[in-house]
Image (cartoon, rainbow, N blue to C red):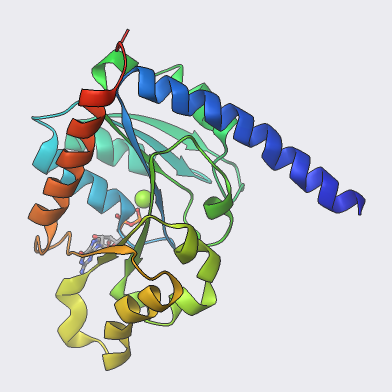
Length: 225
Ligand SMILES: Nc1nc2c(ncn2[C@@H]2O[C@H](COP(=O)(O)OP(=O)(O)O)[C@@H](O)[C@H]2O)c(=O)[nH]1
Ligand SMILES: [Mg+2]
């Protein structure tokens, strides 16, 4: 069918650019995390907390994706890191060409760790390769424990699940605690962190995990030219 071939050629073109980006990140020794979630799960809060925890050890850069506004890049600037805002004007995901354009505004030799905060939804962002090393789904307890079954492709493609807002667990129905086991049913072996960006639960383990990834990349990365 014509529709299928058009869709394929669009993602093929994206994947070619993503591969160029991946090579570029590698040559600069940059480790890249693509954050996907429903709106409000706490992606920006997580980046803010990571800047607080690791910003004195690593150069952190952030590419922010939202349909409208610079509210999130303003938050990242206030937290102390470089941030480029992409406004998709209604588009539901970031693509590799948007990232390529944003990179032109970032001084890559200063960056060790690059966060890409994708547009808030649990469907489309999962299928667009941005050249990242790791894709993380951030899912907050308030979204309900059934989301891995409703968005299985997104959970299956993710490398990492961050369950945020653990501070709210005592106030939620018991079904909230099913989020982790349900995610593991969809993706056995998925790495899971249970965190709270509000009270700090789980963040030290998160910092250690990120630190290891960035340091590994620095050892194996390229010329940083
Ligand atoms: N209770 C609680 N609220 C949180 C936590 N993390 C983020 N929030 C709140 O959730 C809302 C959305 O957070 P934000 O970082 O903007 O989410 P994003 O849309 O995924 O970037 C804000 O009001 C945050 O203060 C958390 O761990 N616990
Ligand atoms: Mg945000």
